[in-house]
Length: 113
Image (tube, rainbow, N blue to C red; front, side, top):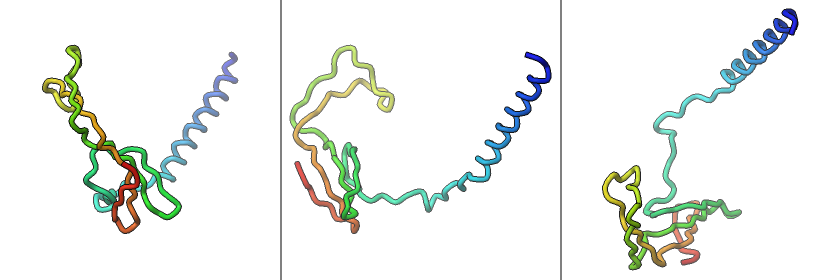
């Protein structure tokens, strides 16, 4: 590649990079303060996932529950969980899952169990 073409290409790439950096700095949002970090809308769940907002403004979520009376020992070669360096814990399962509706005022109602 001729030297002139290389210089033009490098100049163009540099200008593009500089433009992207300037645009990112101009549009960067300020870091949230600790007071604006968020407010819990529902507590007391154990294993909640699959969140959805309804047309009525309510939050719907599936709470997996804490298990029940079915206890299965861990397999012999199960490694410990990263957050729990002790021996592997048994698997507990059961019929404790539920779908919750959390109204805009915070009241909870079990929709399905």
